[in-house]
Length: 190
Image 1 (cartoon, helix red, strand yellow):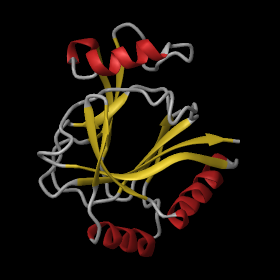
Image 2: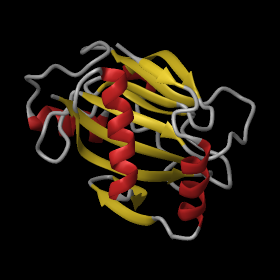
Image 3: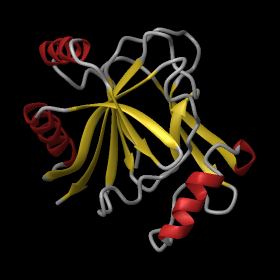
């Protein structure tokens, strides 16, 4: 199930977090074939997000990894359609994207959900690490291998949660000049 919640953070937490993000630099984090630009989330922010999700999920939420990420018109401009089946050696149940920065373009943009020509809308649990790596390196930019299913529109302070094995990407691949800032978290439901 995919769901989204508008006005996820109280305005005072959203405003304080945006202020904090603006006073720090995003650091480049390199992975094979891709760089991300991230800032770490405070423990209090993670605790708030997990508590809110726990209420929504009616269960305890355990974070595997959570961070802020930025993309703009020059940084992080690849499609990189992928699944988050394995994060730091663990299999998260769900992924969360929380749109932090104000909306700067009127065209459709947000989080895209895709189907792969062979695997469908999600990566199977029994996929090998070699096949996972091959898909990221060889197919994540090849739009002929994918069908766009839907785009969950970008609105500041909208949180989106979806199964972590679903194929997804930002949409479109390039963001606005001042930057699309999001909080990303991968989590398990206990």
